[in-house]
Image (cartoon, rainbow, N blue to C red; front, side, top):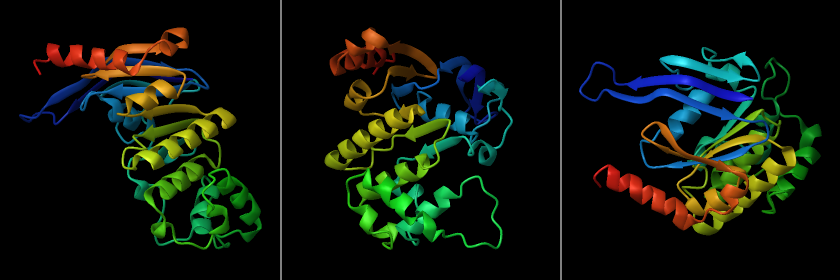
Length: 257
């Protein structure tokens, strides 16, 4: 369904900071998989998401989605099929607009904008039904400005907006990292529920090893632009947080840390 083939990517070419991150990097994601991607800083996790979304273009290699080569396709065109939730809760919503206005923007994704009203009040009940899934009472606060919500509420709203029109691919870029532990757990449970119910193919970058163990169907561990672990099924079910930490520590020792 999604394939990264022979990806090569160099950053800061021609400078003292030149770095080859990916060299012949390959990754295949099957339809319906919920992939947790873990790894140390600089391992290529977020760059992988950026290549999928089109925010970073590889120097060589191909990005294939549903059999179509989208390597050179602009990110705004990919956005019709690829949704993303970022680490910062403020990036997925507009703070100066109400919850309903934010929902309307998400609802009109992929549509041409003309002189018609952007706010469709006839969709109010639908928006309320979607927000009700969060269990946060936001369905009764449609006229509340998004900027007044807590971080957890805002990230939950961003998640609903990203999946309001079921995307082909959902990218989660450390989307719980900026939240307190309770909000983080709530957003993860909501994420799992939405992904399973809508059967969305999902790539989740996370530093939270507990989330990587408890959620998803497959775990990929990256280091220095390479895949050092790729497991699913029973093998994945038998892995514990300590197992992942052991691999991290072995890599750290190999790197002289």
